[in-house]
Image (cartoon, rainbow, N blue to C red; front, side, top):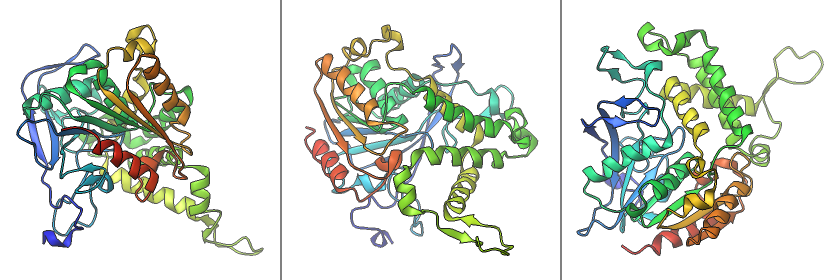
Length: 381
């Protein structure tokens, strides 16, 4: 059945849960006594263990980054176009590690998990997390896998923030840092979008103060609206215009028509929201958007990003997209300017794309794929 998959696919993959008994000290002062991380790997770790690549997921991502879970599965992992044999992250060369971050809802310990102290789901009582907590947990996973140094840590959006944090917290543990469509901290507008999305969840009567699992409810309406808000910001005006324009799905503006007018874009957004609300957890969404809001790479360095990046020892690739207004090219150029002033080795590319912030996920963008592949091919293993 594996032959049914594309020849450049990693094929069938099986997630693996890693349990950690050593307590994890969190940035907020609390301690997580034990936890699980759900992980997938692709490719083969070489004898010198020098070819490992860590892929950090964005807000709604998880461990299933490439391949398929069953022979009948027609939906590959979320970054399948970029991970696999002959792809930018080439599994003929690299051993790729992808995980569901702590606080997630796809197998790693998070709000849907059972709190060992109460025997009930954590829900809203799960500790708040920072990006540095995810990186600390990832570092423990690295040690469990017997890897001393990543060939590269790669991430888009919130994943790019994790990659940058790796370069500061564990500078000896990575040789390359790939930061795609990201920023050193969120703008006030971005924080406002995230808060609006959270308020949509809070206002759902089924939210129950975050303890909906105990009550047997799900705030699907609020989470659906939150996803719709987020999804609008991930697209570009030009991209939405070309895909949907003002086309109608139903109804008419003709005088006397009683059928309500519905635009194609409305149908699309409702579909996205409804689908997401069935597969994601509302408390996880709240937790991860707050981690996104709290991230500030240079906070502990007197808000001086140059001083922060002086701690890094790796090389950097930074990529932005012209139509991305959520994480605009200006934010990537700020990263590059700070790296340059810190005298770090950095390659920067601003890619022409109509796909907005989602461009880092979208396939069939030749320039993006070529420069990403060329950089990864140049990494010595």
